[in-house]
Image 1 (cartoon, rainbow, N blue to C red):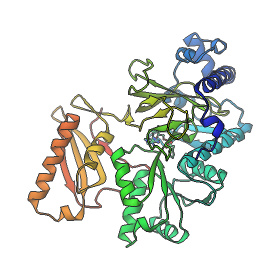
Image 2 (image 1 turned 90 degrees about the vertical axis):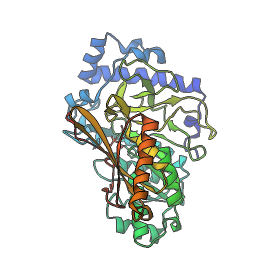
Image 3 (image 1 turned 120 degrees about the horizontal axis):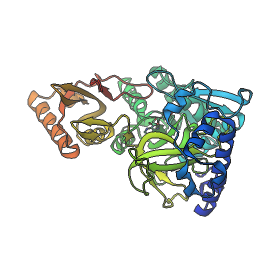
Image 4 (image 1 turned 45 degrees about the vertical axis):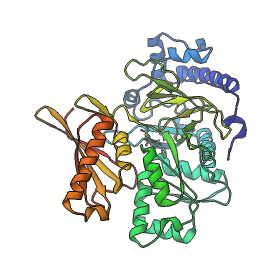
Length: 433
Ligand code: DLL
């Protein structure tokens, strides 16, 4: 279902004309309202009035996470505080969080974008949305809440945690759409099994999963175990939260970027040069309609691709690939670049292995070591030592062949790796880099 028929299917020339107009307006507004941007533009020697085409975007300087830190908490806001009606933060793990603000208009835009998002997964009036993204400072819970209400669906604002209660609600209320992180979805499925329930007997038709990386192989596993269509959704607090891009249920092939609000680019993370469609690099976004917290060429650190062919669903919006990882959580192990999602893809292809794993990176005698801990199912775990040994060897070989690194593989007992109710932690890096 396409929520916004006009804007999601605009011919590209029409879309680009809107983008240029909005780009120039936001650059001008930031230049005059946010001291950081005035200085930043002046130092780069660009005047916002000189923006005449999308090509001119390249001349604008990047905004980095550090700039947001330097202006903590409200220094990047482009409206006075009496216009701000909501504050969220990004889910950083260390130090002070990044603070983001919304005007009434921003909340309205966000609700529209989330309405587009849930519609893309087939959610409309009559659906019941079991929303297990965290409510609070995290953008996930409230973002989905407003979008689901906007399309006329009924929302169960259950938030994360209290897994047993979640199962009771799922079984008694019959929700049709599940929204949570992919790792929490798997945990819910597992907990249902433990409680003697068959997750597939619930009424879910689709799940909208995101906020953390997950591989195509993980999708297949989730769909098979949970009996629903598993859709990928991407977003980040600095843009708006969830509601930046989403897959459509028709193709499940790339995430449609809501380009009339967020202008995407892919750059080489080392040189900052723009890359061609299809090339792998870092995603950069410019907000085109945000009022309280607009950003120009914000470096997300997320690694993916962009392509522009129209989709079978009818949307003309560019599609980004699944996020392969972040440039800052890419592991460099003995000089080889490894994304945790690549290891995940290898593991998920092995029979008997469960989608719960942990990568432990350390350094011994100046050499990096990678240990891959992965759970196996009960049947395999109770097998003889010989069977386990040969499975370990098999995984070791696959990782070596696919990624070019030697990993120590440790098969661990079912349910021994910590489950997450929000974003999963997959990597422990013990090196002091
Ligand atoms: O995670 C917003 C969100 C909520 C997205 C609910 C989707 C669903 P932050 O806490 O600011 O915002 O974290 C943003 O999470 O830069 C990516 O690194 C990662 N991320 C988000 N979605 C995906 C995804 C929310 N589908 C950061 N695949 C982003 C991979 C994702 N990584």
